[in-house]
Length: 191
Ligand code: SF4
Image 1 (tube, rainbow, N blue to C red):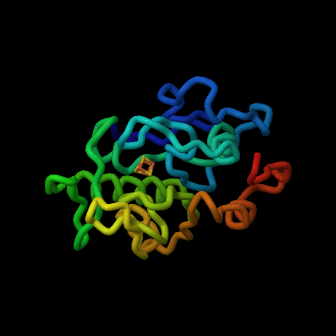
Image 2 (image 1 turned 90 degrees about the vertical axis):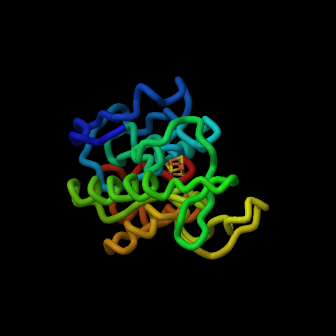
């Protein structure tokens, strides 16, 4: 899945993929705006996780529906399918449990996320914690035993290296409020 052209204002390139009714609370009554942040697509309700599920956060889905957030999934954008074998990071590489190296797709998707942010002048990303692509402060340790270690996913690290602010689905409220236009003062992180 590529991103050949920026989405039209207020339209989401993922909209046809989002499970109907999930994460679609409309707090902006259909108002559209220019995107001011990137968000992990799974947090917007897109079923793009390795297991075919989403991790919807309604307040973030509402921003995406209003055109203020761009949903992106580095793993799908990098060419991986849904569902797919999960990977964990080991020595900077994204490996499946049986040792298959998926780093190339992960890195391609990370670069696409960075390029998307550059094209739109976006300086903030809200990303799914613990993901080998999107993890902001914790990732699994590569043993597939469920152990978390401090670290960033590959896309999150590239966005941070770009000088962007990267936050996760637990601590995004203040950072998001700081970049939203004034007329969206009704937005609530619990929305
Ligand atoms: S790569 Fe990021 S956006 Fe895609 S499913 Fe994983 S956490 Fe969500």
